Amino acid sequence: MSKAVQDALNQTAELPVYATPEDVVSALDPDYPIYCVRPHAIHRAARLFLDKFPGETLYAVKCNPAPHMLKALYQAGIRHFDTASLAEIALVSQLFPESVCYFMHPVKARAAIAEAHERYGVRHHVVDHLHELQKIAEVIPAHRDVVILVRLAVHHQQVVYDLSSKFGTSAEEALVLLAEIQRRGFSAGLCFHVGSQCLDPDAYRVAMQTVREVLDRTPVPLRCVDVGGGFPGRYLNHPVDGLSSYIDAVVAATRELGEAGESQLFCEPGRGLAEGGESLITQVQLRKDSALYLNDGIYGSMNEEQTGLRRPHRVVATRKFSAERTRFTVYGPTCDSLDVLPDSVELPEDLREGDWIEFGGMGAYGLACRTAFNGFFPNAFVAVENEFVADGSPLG
Ligand SMILES: Cc1ncc(COP(=O)(O)O)c(C=O)c1O
Image 1 (cartoon, rainbow, N blue to C red):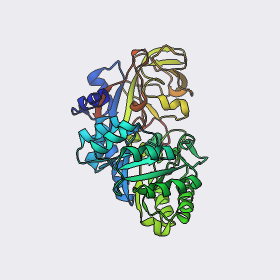
Image 2: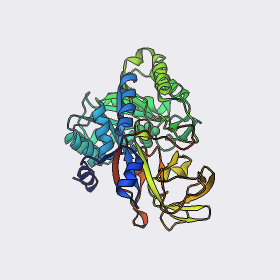
Image 3: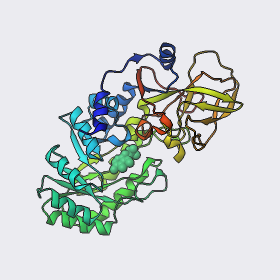
Image 4: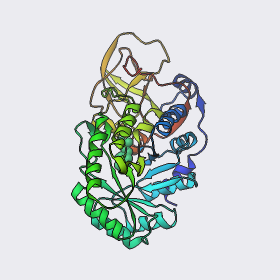
């Protein structure tokens, strides 16, 4: 068992439960960052997909592989997992022997393909190139129970991360790949990812047009169409429609597929399921005029701030704060000058050393992207029962 899996399994103890972040601070007086897990919020997001999405919802484990996240999703009813590595497959399979893993990375090591198939019973793989298909065919015996999905490249302007610049193929190439999958004795599917933090539900309709184009030109029957992730989280600088409107857009787009709409439908949300499930309590370690030095930052849980996401925040109400607010430059704990939030943050004007700030929207790509640079590694967890409500924000 890999060290990552072992570490994750060691963390499965139940989390201590507090009513509010204020209670956490008053009980622990923490000078280290603490993730506040909100299982009820994870449950709510999972139920939305399970109740509304007309197909299988695969949680994208990369977004947040913490056992408390996986367990909350499982308890809500999620049984299918989009896994990108053997370590993720091992983790999910150890925690939930009844679950189904899908190996959705278009580039895999031969040994990982073999072990996923033989040891963990994985039967779905993604390719976007003939050589990857050849590799799989040399490792796994051909069988129609093994489904190989061809990933289409789809570009949309209104996404924060375009995930088709690295992976995905053209409709033309997809036709060749589908024919080869069929010829080699596997079953075929199609998939795409509109891009992470998609700001426009119409992106799914546009992507589905490429699926339609391929379908119109291939004789190969499709076992499944996978619309990927992209379902957005709620950030200060991205007021987006609710997740329901994104699922509605997928449903409408699927209808336009006609007969092919009868293939099994998958989605792979990461952010859409996990974002609201955690916040992070940080502490001010020093104030210099209008600069604050916190105990977490860009190299820790706030990696995504670098690429333009602005997480909502609030002050933990441990005392009476001034109603007057001012903008602070916020630095993280490492010695690197890059460890600073790109935008200043509005907070009470009398904030001082020892105060705590809670950042919301930490469930997605927060702990998953943290590093131990300079020896700072946020790794404390509690469960919290209240809802996160940002200070004076439209998300509140
Ligand atoms: C193949 C694949 N599926 C799903 C996801 C999850 O995407 P999101 O978090 O935008 O829902 C990703 C993210 O990188 C991905 O690469």
